[in-house]
Image (cartoon, rainbow, N blue to C red; front, top):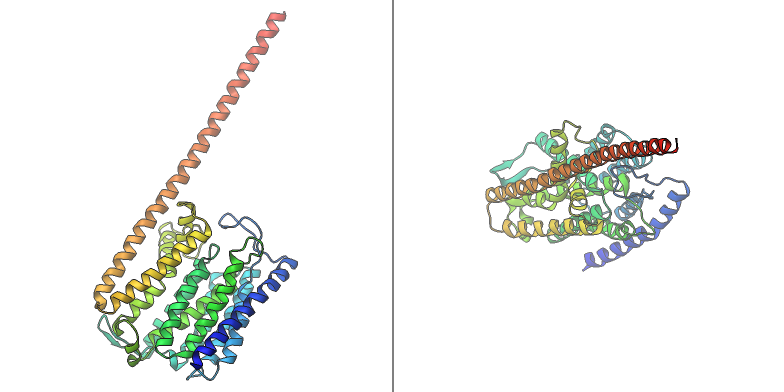
Length: 393
């Protein structure tokens, strides 16, 4: 009962703090002319305020202050430095673009604080693919790589209005439920706080009058929190899984299903870029949400809603299957779904490329025809003038 009261107060407080301060951020950004300038890849056409993630940062810091003491291993003290590092880097990247390498180094430092806390240590995969004990050095490698992947995957899906917020809300609702059932109330309250901020932000992100983007400041912070929750989920002790509706050995697959949208989109985009001999972090419009908008003609809201619903349904399906199915069968199913989705979206990507090529070819043909017609008209006019001149003579 005490948890429920704290959760309600924390949710309302985080929501109001984000909702009431974002307009102030918008006013400052507009006054200082720090708006995001659209380019050929942008899904928006006008200069739009960014830096919405500033509200996420101080809301989380306040929340961590009020829920301190609930963390058995003083996790809050380890989370705040990592949050601060990513906040500073994200803020700088929103104001003055920095290189992917610099961001990656900052992420490594932020992640190091989390990995050094014993609460997040993954000592076993509990029989997943017959893997049990994990050496500490291997945990550092796996945990660090996993957190880097999640942070950057979430950062990459922030490409259209509402998508990052909707996907984040779905993921955080699931983690809130998991940590509530396992009585890890500290992490449940962090999930609730982050969710409240995203819900408050979503209204502004979808607004046509008071629009704002979360920017790298926001996406790095949200991705960091989600990566922490994922690491903690995989580090849960075996006895707590008795209250969860899936088998202990299926936990890694459940984590992948929760993060299926950012992970699939990142893997797909990286594969396309590498196939085209481009750097993995080079910008383009090959993301899944771009396909839905450019090829299917969906609006930002429709694309975000469809992707969010897919994420939720995918997780529910894997939780149901994970309650009885062995992990090998679930791995086969997961691979099959990913291959199917990859085929569909690669096909659409090919069709979009072909369509663009046809449009460009048609434009070239039209230009050539226009030039030929112009020359013919010039010749006809000249011939007519010559005939008129001879007639006068």
